[in-house]
Image 1 (cartoon, rainbow, N blue to C red):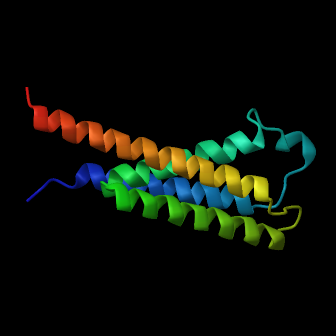
Image 2 (tube, rainbow, N blue to C red):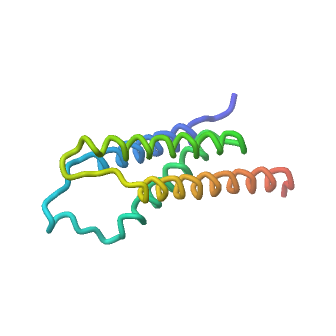
Image 3 (cartoon, rainbow, N blue to C red):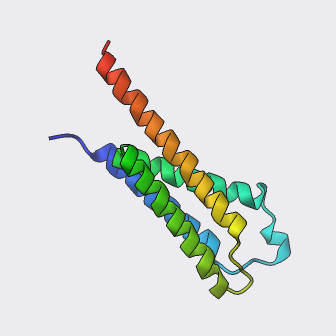
Length: 127
């Protein structure tokens, strides 16, 4: 039987990142002095989805097909959040945000896939 604890931890962290994305995206806009962020908004989207995709890809040990599914699922998740923002006071969904979400998911999924590929090659090569 394989030891699954690291995968469970990665998946739990991925779930927490997805919850943080939803909370950050669906809360009403704060008054202007509190709203200023250190990163440009597009960068925040890219980084958040990159981290979520990387953690999901590693946690699921996604192969190429699994990586494509992770990317597609996160793109749909990002699209749904952009649509839901229309219901939140002071928020509005934006296509630019959707594309940054998708770009982040793609980069994170690719990074996870290459990490797993490198690990497989390294394990096959042996010491």
